[in-house]
Image 1 (cartoon, rainbow, N blue to C red):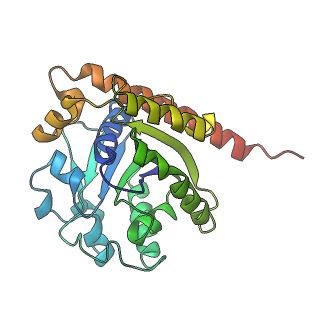
Image 2 (image 1 turned 120 degrees about the vertical axis):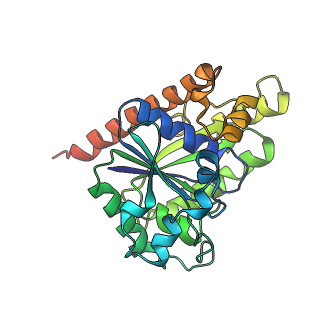
Image 3 (image 1 turned 90 degrees about the horizontal axis):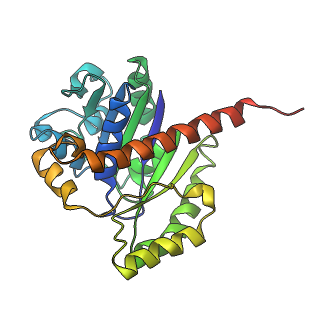
Length: 264
């Protein structure tokens, strides 16, 4: 199982929209996919099942790792797509714990998920690099950074990358897959200029070629508790996440080949 954390320095960057629709794209491609809501706000769960606040979930496992995974995993209509809600204990020291205080239990959760033969586990985290999010990054195989295409947001990227470099001390194998531009508005000069600035700021391989444009259809999909592609006119937006999924898989294949090759 490949575990990928979706992380951001601040909220409001489209992290949950990215997590839900990217997980759906992996599942539609035939990969057995688990989406984990590790944001105490429970945004993923509320997007996909209105009863999520009543379900045991990720934070309940952190509070009590004796809870069996079968009680946490919620199937969806798509056979290859399951989710774990944030849970009723989502206020369980979510952001205030010291670094490493949840590490063993996060590892246990991912180990138990892997034992159920998932191919991909996507984790929607709380904004910031502290508390449980810190421990998820210290455990995950890879991360994706959604970044809103607006001037103030772009300025936070170098700080975020510096923080991730520090976390590589505890997780040397962490694969930073890249930054994904979200909420892009090409017809708005400030948004287009912010996107251009980010492309100049980052190495080419650090920025996904696929960008997610601002579109009201994402709001409608969330209101109905569905991935965007399930909506009657959502197929066009769905192809964006198929493209991003293909980019991610290509990056994972390349990184695996690089790790395997050991020059003499």
